[in-house]
Image (cartoon, rainbow, N blue to C red):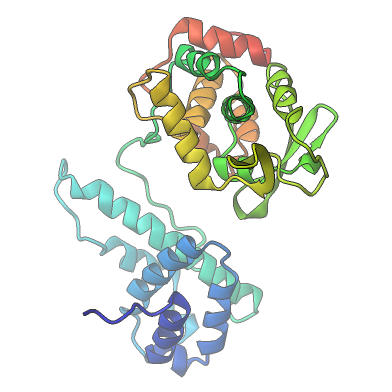
Length: 328
């Protein structure tokens, strides 16, 4: 029987203590504190593995002044060697280098703010990707989104909740994590305040087609306080909505079941609606910067992932263009 895995915090602490470079330069505490500033557990794990990979190649006799841009660039260039052109490993190596580079930039910038380094040696290093990447989630035809909304209907309170959830995801293109965090206090007049990745606040106006779906659902709720969850669990024995919020898994299963009941054969997830709307907005002629702001992307490069080769139909783009006031 395998022993239980150590928590990530323990792994980081042990690694810092076992790395000669940190001990020689009195960086054990500050390195552990750096990882405490990373809010996402997944990002923390990825950066831990990236930094562990980098500092394996740093001699214990080095000081921070010895870690120059040339040293960092040389190390990154050695990741995976240089596979021949056309080798499938090439894109994997570039992606790995970019992850290590991001981790190094964050760590060295933390040391710079602590006045332990004069400059960030990884700040100006750039690697060009070998191919143009696209998002992995395929956009749905908007006709299928409309079919799904129509099939759910509004016969039962659960139908009205699920229809409101699908409409909210489709018309706001928000991440499912932001949707399940909504409270009644998130809505004000004709706008909504979303809390996206990292707790970032993202206020946005409600798209014109959306309010009727939300209003039909809200009429079924017995209590509407600003602090209560907007999308809530249903109690089958009581026949009422509880005050507890839907989880990500709840929302995922609602969408999977509803799509299957509507006869949609493709794989539909909460992110499918985000991919659909952002792709259609880009195809309809909305400016890239406006779509980036609408999607709350930190970088324009991320928005460009939605410029899919698999274009939506002209009539689908026209539907979204009409809803958002853009010109196809």
